[in-house]
Length: 184
Image (cartoon, rainbow, N blue to C red):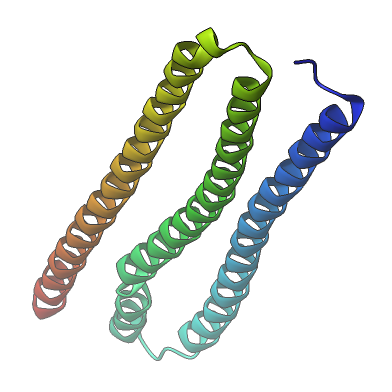
């Protein structure tokens, strides 16, 4: 069975739609990243200006050092928060790209099943074994794809949990160090 021009055009159209969806998801992630960075830049600028105002009004060196210590203290928390936001943006973008990819894969698998079924009706009766073998190969490919999707999801979930645990530990340690430094 030969592919018709309509089938080729439909395949090209489907490829373009998938590419467009994936590009849009990637740009959504970039847009979120840019929004985050702009917000961080605004916040840092505002906090620095406020700190400079306070520091310029310090009465003595002890007050200035105290202001500086209080200014620096939340830095670890802010860095960790920024890292969490980055991780969330990356995870959301990856999840969106995986969804588009999975939908495309399922659509192509259905079309392949239809094509294989059509092959069986055009071929002589002795080709049933060949059609069944092709169907089994497609089923095996689907199983591999689904297993890899599950493995990726488990890896992302595990990494997310480990990142959260490490972040929480680092935050507790930095708070403890800061409290010790202020006490002395």
